Structure formats: C-alpha cells, structure tokens
Amino acid sequence: MVAALSRAGHRVVVTGGAAETELTALVAGDCALDLGGRTGLAELAAVLADSEVVVAPNSGPGHLAAAVGTPVVSLFAPVVPVSAWSPFAGRVTVLGNHDAPCRATRSRKCPVPGHPCLDGITDTTLLGAVHQWTGES
Image 1: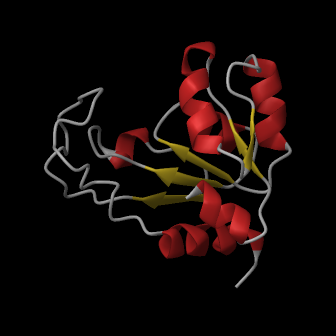
Image 2 (image 1 turned 135 degrees about the vertical axis):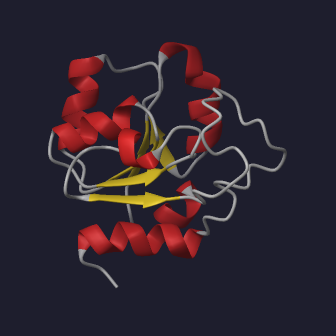
C-alpha cells in the first residue's frame, strides 16, 4: 500500500512508537519517510494536521488525525464495532470487511489466519478512498 501511494505521487510518512521502529522501517521501505519512534504526541499531531489525508489502522493516530481536522482513511479491523470505535469526524472513510470472522472478538492480535478483514483491501480501493479526499481521480 505504501508503494502504491508513492507510485500515485503521494508523499508517504510512516509513524509509530519507539518500540515499533523495525516495523515502521519495513513498512516505509524506500518509498516513504520513516518517523517511527521520532515523534511525541504533539509532534505527531502536527504531522497529521499538515497531512492532506491520513491512512491509519483503527488506532490512536486515526483518531488524532480526525481530531485535528485531517481526512482519515481507516483500515478498520472489526474486532471492535466500527459504529463505536471508528474515528469520529465527518471526513472518515472506513475500509475493511466488517463481517469477517474476527468481528467483535476484541482481540489485540488477529485471531483468524490470513487476516480476511483487511486483506481484501486492494491498492485500487485504497487509492480510491484517498482520492475521495484529495479530489484526484
């Protein structure tokens, strides 16, 4: 997904906590700026506020992006109800299979082999959701 966004001309920034630097480096690869472990809450809020759109899982950064007024494309695993836990803002697109077997398990790690709730999100679907907010076609 990072490579697809980069190929489409988007500048991609990957964020994460200090304990996630190996993961953020892997995700960023050579297509994105890796800020893993380099931002506190205030710096992260500033990065998100300066972004045209934020792509994030159902976690804190998606909610923070919505709070600072940035459109969010939420890659939402339905382990908790989307109606209660998606970012609360008018400019949010939620992607993912909300009828997947992991639905409502409240699991912190995917309890279903193959991650069917998120694996169906194609690069084309993601780009379409991003472009909905950027005005691109």
